[in-house]
Length: 211
Image 1 (tube, rainbow, N blue to C red):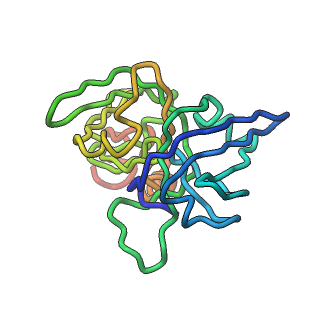
Image 2 (cartoon, rainbow, N blue to C red):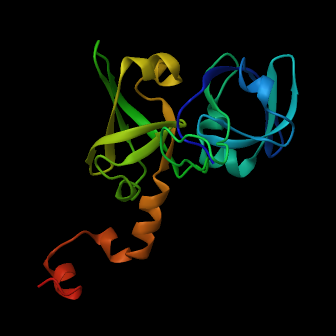
């Protein structure tokens, strides 16, 4: 379990593809000194297991299912990635609960930067926007953010300069792919009320005794 508060930007040093899997090596100043073999670490919001440490680097095995459902498969050596160690029981939670289990991959439509606040517009796969709520929490490449707008299959998030500086979102461009994890509380709430997926209209209100 994570919080969406990125602790550092790591740098991918090696990506070795094997049949049905991928071995990922990430250079990390902080996490490499804390993580042990078997620990979970968030890389771009994906919960991965450390299989090797040493020399200021962490190594992970990435399975085919993870590659298929995240942007890990498109990562190249030299790229920056967001790194977060797991939460400690009893520790402070500054963001929101992030599981590290990616719901979908979004495509960046546009990036608008300004001195005070920047914005990223992201297109989600068909049917996924139902899980995004305006002013609700969302994790993008592991960064805990607030959804500013939801429009059909698109969402917008706003970022302060500090977030752009401390995470890899500052280097994102239109056309790039980002990992999306919706707020876990919202997902469970929606699962319990499947009718809400169709929207609230007069028939919905009548069915549930409001009219």
